Amino acid sequence: SRSLVAKTAHGPSATQRLVCEYNAYTAMRTLQGTVIPTVMGMFTTKDGKNTVLMMSYAGEALKTFSDLRPDEKLMLFHRLVRLHKTGVQHNDLEPRNVTKSSSGPLIIDFDNASLDHSCPGASCQEL
Image 1 (cartoon, one colour):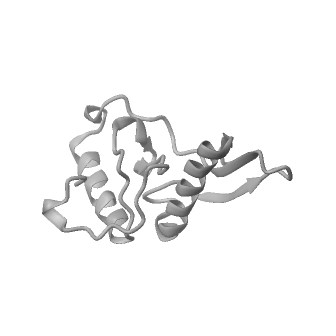
Image 2 (cartoon, rainbow, N blue to C red):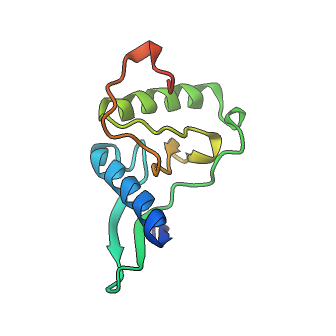
C-alpha cells in the first residue's frame, strides 16, 4: 500500500499558497513520481474555507544537504534541471524541501514556485 499526505489550508492566504503549489505540480505532471511526489488532486470543502492537496508520501525531509551521498547530490542537480525545463523554479530549495526516497531525492513544497522560469543554465542562481 502507498502512503498519502494531505496538505491542508485554512483561510485565503494559505489557500492561495496551496493553489500555487498545486499549479506547480500540475505544470510538472510528467515529473510526478520521479522528481516530485505524485499528486492525486486538490479538493475544497463546500463552504470554501478548507482546501486539501492530496499527494504521495515522499519520505523524510533532509536536515542538511550533507545527508545526501555525492551520487544523490548529482541526481538532485539533474532532477532540478529537469524541473527547470518545465518552466518551474522552486524559489525555496532548502534541505527541508528535499526528501530522500528509495528512488533518490524528491523535491517538495512548491508554494513559492514561479511557473514562468526560463532557465539560463549554468548562470541560474537556483542551480
